[in-house]
Structure formats: structure tokens, C-alpha cells
Amino acid sequence: MNDLKLILANLTAGFHNKQVLLSDIVAVLLMVTVLATYEFLVYRYVSKRSFYSKQFNIALAVVPYFIATIIMSLQSNLVITLGTIGALAIIRFRTAIKDPIDMVYLLWSTHTGIVCGTGLYEVGIVTSLFATAFIFALDLVPIKKNSYLLIVNTSNVGDETELLRLVKEHARFFKVKSRNMTKDKLDLILELRTDKEQSLMEALSGLDGVENSSLVSHDGENFI
Image (spheres, rainbow, N blue to C red):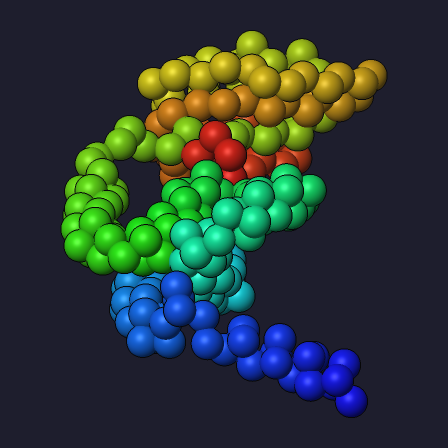
């Protein structure tokens, strides 16, 4: 009976922590909700990935809740601080981040949790606003046109010189990336920049021996 009372006393003690009040927890989580929702909307609007992941965006919005409460706990007890450091040291995340910008949003979520957990709401709000403005400003900076990959299959093995001459007439820059030759077939892959896509493809289609030609846009990492 005494053991049961002791267990109940320990359980109820956890709900009456004088160092972390319920009002403090609610205030922190309300501010986390505001900033996390803001980040959720910014990521949804700015993201231009071919396959937008709603689940990843939701994860970005939820992570600050846990980080904020962890920070609050760390401030309340030295033992918890040491235990948390040890626990986090053994955690490994093996999900690959495919888009570098996703790392920015992950850091943003972490930042939101930390500053809210420490009660620095003004830092979180100002940083979020400045980061948003900077992201939109950089997104408006013009960049050079994406390169193309030209894939040509021809049955005329000796036709490479003529083929490259046509490419040179229509492209500002080109470079042979791959050359695969057999006795009766030649496959070429070239990287090039051009504003005359249609005329280039028409010229290649009129070349004797060309069986197939494809022009694919890419940004160095993804095919578009």
C-alpha cells in the first residue's frame, strides 16, 4: 500500500514542477504554433520541387514543438541536460535530404524550437521575417538559362563531324559528354546551351542516318 502511494506521489509530482509552469508551457507552444505555421506556408509557397512532400512540410512544422519543450526541460534540471545530451548523441537520422534548400528549413524549424523554448520570441519572429524576405529576394535574382543534354542516335558512324558542325551553328557552347560507337551505330550525349532549340532539332532530324534525337533540360542536378 505504501508503495502504491509512493508511486502515485511521484506521478503527481511530475505535474507540479515549480520550475516549468503550465502557463509557461502553453505560452511557448502557442508561439511555436504561430512561427511553425508561418514556416509551413512559406515552404509550401516557395518550394518548386517537382514532387512537393506535404509530409515533410508537416514534419517541419511539428519538430519545433519537441525542441522547444526539450529546451525548457534542459533549463530546469542539470541531470536532464546531461541525459538529453547523451540520448541525442546516439540518435542517427538516415533519411537523405535530396534538395539542399530542405536543410535550410530543417535548421529553421530547429531555430524556432530553440528560441521559443528559451523565451526569445522576438528573436524568432524577427529572424523568420528576415529569412523569408531574403529567400524571396534571392529567388528573384536572374540566373543563366539551364543547360541541355542532347542525345543523338545515328546509324552513320562517320557522320560525327557533320553532326557537331550543326550543333556548333545552333549552340553558344557545347561539350561531348559521352560517345558510344559500334560498327554500325553511334550514340552521342552532348551538354550545350542554346536559344535555338527548335531549329537545332529540325536540322538534326534532316541529317542522314539520324534515327533519334532528344533534348533534355537540366540544372546540374535534376532533369526538367
